Image (cartoon, rainbow, N blue to C red; front, side, top):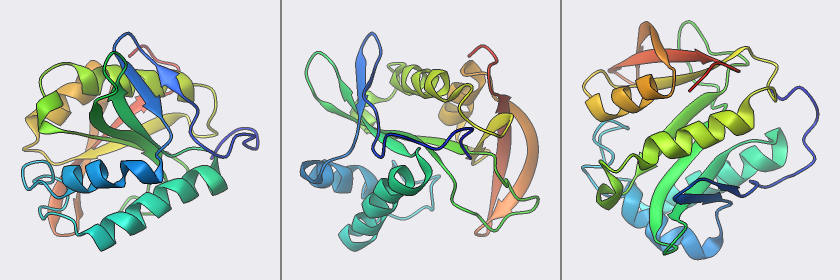
Length: 185
């Protein structure tokens, strides 16, 4: 978890050259639903579109991460237009995997198809890693990526993640990649 108790209980706003990462709001729910209901977007994340009910629970779980743990997910939008891009974040889902991640935070990203191929995922992930460096007890962050998800594996590599081991999670093979905190991204 975090080295010191969190003082902020919601996502701080982070800005990059092109993006704004901010806390989710209830007004974001419709675009959140559109993103997570897209079969192409979730192909490597569970494989099936999410229902509004499942997404409501996910949104509340993400808010709970900030409230209870002091970290979680950010909504990503273009700075120039305010256009919704996707979601990125750090999580502790207590996944039932072997070996367990323990205190190692997991990072993940999901972007709207209109944002693919523009470097937004890399830009957002690097912003989160810069924010996270030095904040966690764990010495590294991890990400779980389906081995056929070439785009996400590419983003992970550009952000300093290296393959560590392979697991089976919910009947799918997943590559676990790690990146030490404080290393260049």
